[in-house]
Image: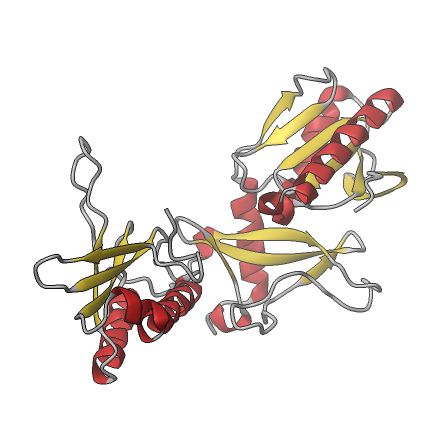
Length: 328
């Protein structure tokens, strides 16, 4: 079944045989929270505009001439106060322009499932919380990364995000996000309280990252090639934790070669194991090519760079010898 993300399609069309009244429903499976509420409302507006075009065009003349028409949003998630305010404004607009009526409600439970309790009207206003701030690392796509910063991150209206960013490892940057429950929100300069310094924020962000539990596993296909996991949230950010890599290097008694082909996939092997390094890079190449061949996973691509952890320096740098050779 189509839903709010599908343009130019009517999700459901119900006509009352007795009254002739028509209900055109929009199936909305998306949540309402501060990180996506603007995008969510824009998506709904676009879908509603598609319905208006259908009502006022040949489709409406053919399928519901003279009928009382209602557009209804049928949602899977609870409505925030922001959503309810949006619905009231939309209802007023549609009614005052004599286009149609407008209603909203929730998807009924499937047969045999208990009725879900919704908490409509909850506040989704953003609240800055130092305890939920974490650093993120991303490749700087600028041609001259030492002079400018270009990352694939824009706001819903197309504006560049104005946020605190710092450089690391020559061609990478670090920015900040906040865990807001079911997603992560970029920390913008406008979000930072006036009584909190960037030094405090950065210190706390790295403390929070250090408390994340990372686990080390040997890969199934290639014994000797290790993986670092933490639930799919901060694997790439392990590059920001030299103490973690010091511990792992001490366990094998050697420097480490690290590959991070996608943001949730971290491989590493001892620097002296040349054959394992080559196998690891081949595995990384396959992961990159897979991510780019599947649109859903393209955003997971991290880097073709390979990293070196040196025990003597307790530091990570980009390897000058190794590279994931994947033609993109």
